[in-house]
Image 1 (cartoon, rainbow, N blue to C red):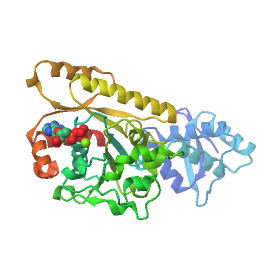
Image 2 (spheres, rainbow, N blue to C red; image 1 turned 30 degrees about the vertical axis):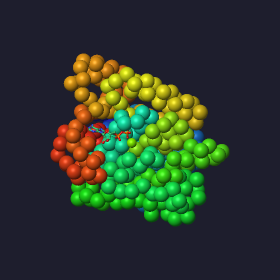
Image 3 (cartoon, rainbow, N blue to C red; image 1 turned 60 degrees about the vertical axis):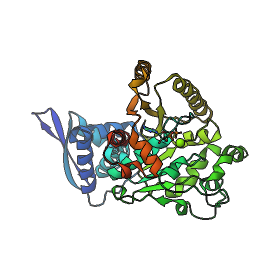
Image 4 (tube, rainbow, N blue to C red; image 1 turned 180 degrees about the vertical axis):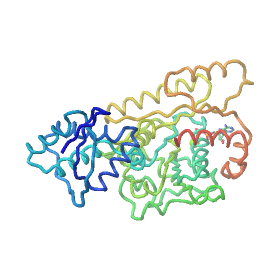
Amino acid sequence: MSTPDSATAREKLLVGLTPEMRLNLRIRAAERGVDIQDAAAHALALWYDTPNVPAVDTGGAKSWGVFLPAGGPARFEEEAKRRTLTKVQAMGQAVTNWLNLHPSPTQRLVSQPVKRILVALQKGGVGKSFLAAGVAQAFAEMGLRVLLIDYDPQGHMTRRMGYQSLSADNDNSLLQHMLGKARKHIRRILIKVEGERFGGRLDLLPACTDAFLFDAVMSSVRHGREETLQRALEPIENDYDVVVIDGPPSLGLSMDIAMHYVHRREGELAERSGIVMPVWADTPSFEAYDLFNGQRHDLMRGTRVQIDELGFVINHFDTRRGASPQRKKEEWEERAAPGVLAVFGDLKEQREATDEHTPLFEYQPNCELTDGLRGLAKELAA
Ligand SMILES: Nc1ncnc2c1ncn2[C@@H]1O[C@H](COP(=O)(O)OP(=O)(O)O)[C@@H](O)[C@H]1O
Ligand SMILES: [Mg+2]
């Protein structure tokens, strides 16, 4: 069946292939930047090395010509015979095997889990709630569907967005869902944040005062404690493109569970989900971060997962306080990893929005802070 092709020193193999396999091979080769003839040759090389390739359906196969390196067609025919397969079946197996081993880059992105971002550092007042609410609003404005979780029992963020925390006698709180005790669907706790620019895409899971007892209650859970947040959110995760968590103000169990929630899941790209750490350009922030990072490492060792840091955000940056903030800012920037994502000054718009109990993007959509938050959201969404 082979004819010499002197121009390319390749030989033509004529074999049947289904139109679907042929199309997939052409598209996948193009997506991966390889020539279709080379993809076919590679598929055969892999097939020769794989003794047990499953049978495939070759119904509707049509004649297809492919140029293989010299000797290729003869080798193929020999191997098909040895495996007592028809040539159509042999080529079908080789192509299908290659397609499975070389997934489409677009398919890989589509199958990624919801992006999960924890905004955290145990130090109070660094700007966790500001940042979590701010990037969530920027994501929603960009067109992403966002779940914003107030994971701090104090409920500052919930109140600042203009809503109320759930009371402790509520039987449908996040903690109740984490314990598997809630009776209603978790969707019923969610509040759709009003605002034209959010387009109904921003949902808030408000704080509940029962979370003050979080660590005490959780310490009695023996099995699968780390997975409790993931289990609670599973029924709604697919409704969102991104989940943003306003982290807890301490380094207890609640922090472990939040950190674990953003660990890199199987098949998830590196540094897609993870932790963003707001810090100040001052010494206490470095000390706080060292403790925080120690806990992250302990948790990774204990649970054998990877928890990625996405970056620092320097907040309340004010050069009027002398040369020290500038030096400390450089110190954050000089760290090899994870890098500084953004720098925010201490600006009146955030303080005013806080006092007005209005989301910043509704209170003052065009200011230095919202611009910075949009840039940050774009970077984190990439
Ligand atoms: N860049 C900023 N400019 C002005 N005020 C800010 C800024 N970041 C945070 N704040 C205000 O500082 C206070 C503490 O910030 P917050 O986000 O609540 O910190 P945390 O959640 O870490 O305790 C809040 O009143 C908040 O509105
Ligand atoms: Mg807070």
